[in-house]
Image 1: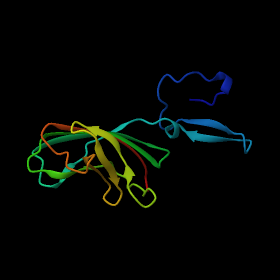
Image 2: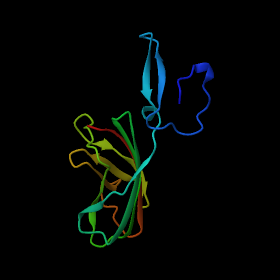
Image 3: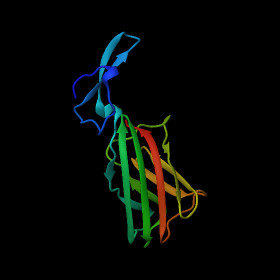
Image 4: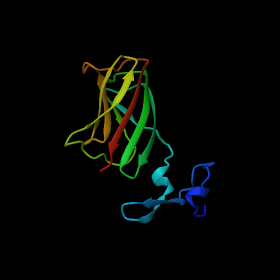
Length: 158
């Protein structure tokens, strides 16, 4: 894509290539800056996390995640866990995250939003372990046959 004047820009018909860039006018410095297209546009990547429990083992569990990274530091993840057969699993559900260690949030873990077919959840991104942790809203286990957990988290990469 060749450089174009603002008056000549047309709508993008497809996402820009990873080596494309935009020129932005910095009015404070009265200068232009070159901004990589992938700094502005983000495509979702997929990840298949590992799901374990604080005690015991699941007989049948599956999970999936979609994620992207903004500006090299902010990670956005949405995911789902499906417990078909709980087996001997009990306690807290642990879900791995894509590569990249999370930074601490004021010295602690990041909150995770979501829901489950067991009701409300209490969830966090454990920074020390680089994993998501799920319990029911009352801090009891949500592990049972035929349960689904859906979640969303935004955090800073270390």
